[in-house]
Length: 278
Image 1: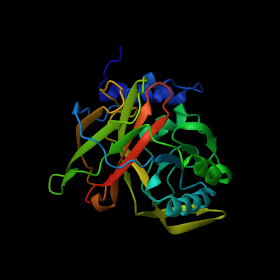
Image 2: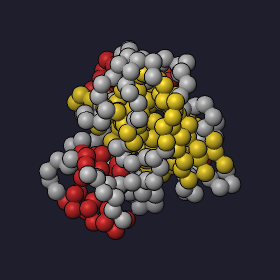
Image 3: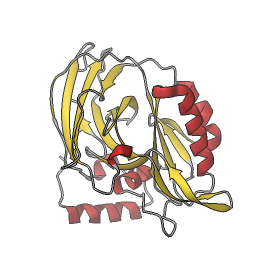
Image 4: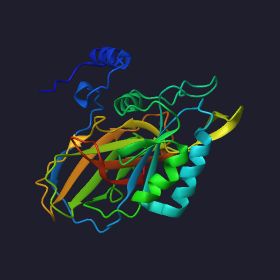
């Protein structure tokens, strides 16, 4: 059975885990951000769009990462809301250049190590299939853009943000479109656009580079919360989670991303996003 550790114990566990060369099992991570929510009967979800989650592993010292940013931006312009991109600063080239804020996170480093990312830039599509370099990103993403949904997810209805207290209430509905026997988890994260800093681009450093859809932190545990549902077609479930947006995040530039995953394989089956202040 999992046990919750205090912050010092977590930090020690992470230090030991990151020092190992072996692949780390998900149960070894006990990072916890404090929001679990309570499930109740939900409402049907009108939007049937199947979205895919593209997680790009990057760093400001990664000379080829601007090329990957451009590729993903071009695909998003075509795919529209069928694709959600998240940039995770982790790994070999993520140590901040002098003058930049540190965009690395403990959760991002944990995911980087768990999934075995070792070359950059790298992309994972729905946490399924091979890890892709910049040369494979476009074909890999396009190959799954037309997949049919097995579940629907809505997060853009009634999500609330109080700018004075910086309290965020995230309200999500899930609807099953077919029977799903496997156990599922629901993960919510915060990402931020419009962060300006230095970025290595080829052999030169760009001083005013705009970092987009930067992963900032999870609202849930890094592996999500268990979806309390029977998995039957037509079942609708609702969960509400609370989060205090850190003061260093620009609320107007932040988005909330949620995704439903297979608990065992980690494969993402559906995702959605909403702006904090929209």
